[in-house]
Image (cartoon, rainbow, N blue to C red):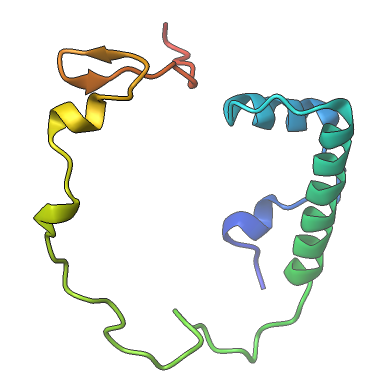
Length: 113
């Protein structure tokens, strides 16, 4: 059976500490060296588990969208105005705003710039 999706990306290579640091930076985290090692170990375990899953013979297992036979498990959306903030209230505790909007630090880089 050919690999597809994310399982085709799973390799048995170990996660490097550089990759963990990059993920932490993108998540705006500042982990200690001990935490970086813990994250690296945890990610290695996850990748190892995904490698096991990738090697399972699932030819006799039917594809499913969900395991349980539930239907229409969603409720209708209801607007509860008593729980809403005005724009002024929403921005009241923001550290930075501009013309009625939140201002946040850029975390993604545009390679074209």
